[in-house]
Image 1: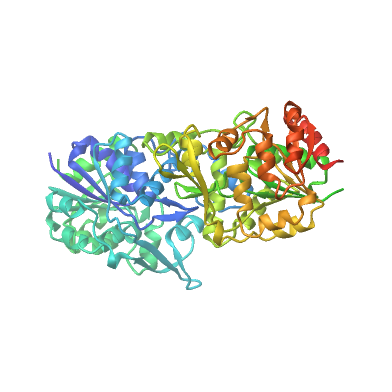
Image 2: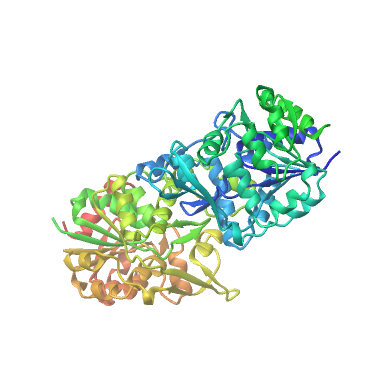
Length: 309
Length: 309
């Protein structure tokens, strides 16, 4: 069976991984996860994409929300609300334990990758879950209307990504280095999968860590990307909108043109079969299949097609 | 009715205050609270004595534990335990909201006294609750057996105060200044009450903030202390043991000698009536009454005796 490295954002990547570990042995999978959505809030180190990946693959994520833990309660938030505190970023009671642990371990000098490995182990995961970098990288969003630059979660959660974006940058990326295991996983993988995550704010910051884009590009023939757009729409989040606002084609063709420099193939949904020739014209092989991951079984089937199993 | 300032530790002080606000108008009461038990844990700013005072006066504290909120749940701790994280200091889910709020506001530049006032207001309190200082002061305990110096909560909670103590110091006290309102409350009070808190690790660090001991001493005739010992025993915590280990008499007489320089009167329990002459010999008036605060009504009666109402 192939060793697989997966470039990951949050929910879409997490659902893909939950299927991938059914299609190939989990120990052969390394998830390389975006950390540019991370933030410190209420003093706590919060890593939304890492937690979404771990919770989802563990079968512990909330199926409705897509983020956080199932069977969650909100009593800490309720107290915070009493004080008029910042409750726009919901932290469930069960979930808070993860942030407490991560914050304490980081304060004690542990790296984010070491803390993440401990968290993944505690949830019984056999796949590797690795932050793309242990260094702080932060997605900063310049809003079109005001010209203000805001942190990612301010845009994504507090403003519900309902405001036009002028530009995106990844603060700290220039000084970051890949976390231990990232370049090794990319070099040693039989296949590199680009998860159906947001190209602008999930995949791009992973590639922005110096050395990662080069390592992926060096394996271009082994790289298969899965389109996060179905019929020109993101299933969740602002991928279509961000592509459009930043001057890209808001279709699988736009995704293909963005990914062509480092990916050899793009998997698109049957709804986008009509774009297959345009994808090929952008320089990628095009695989057409059902990309909607209704459950881990559907995600596993998608992975099998993507990997040509 | 008299304006009253109260020097406070945690549980004993909180129970006294819950009665005091029945005996005098709450708006005339200022609780000046020890902060030397405070700590940062899991990245969160935790102020145990301030929270115990607020929760207890609000009628929201857990009656069994004495600390934390009633109707509490422990789901964050349960997640933390999954990771093998540090669960020795229990943080309930409801309680966590208070720490999240305080940590965020402090990070934004608010003072501890401003944050505490907001928290007290949110719980509907009319009395003033003021940390003795906005600056970091930390009780450090040197253990007799090993000579190691540990932080207060490491001694008090993690080791359950079951190890002998060689010495106590208040790190940072020399550089601290009283929080806004502290010296004013002491100067303007008709009565200053020393709550039945631990003389060594609750009252002493309050007095160690430069200017506070002097301000209390200047009002010595208006200062009435309530003994935290009943029949030579602390009702809760290690007050008797610490007095003994640090070379003091572990009775109300030892308390009287410690407090004589700044307090004009000591209220002792009927169980200690036999020590009244020795208390007077130490230079204090001695008031004998029932000091066990079974409920806020009993605490109110104790306050009325202490204040001579």
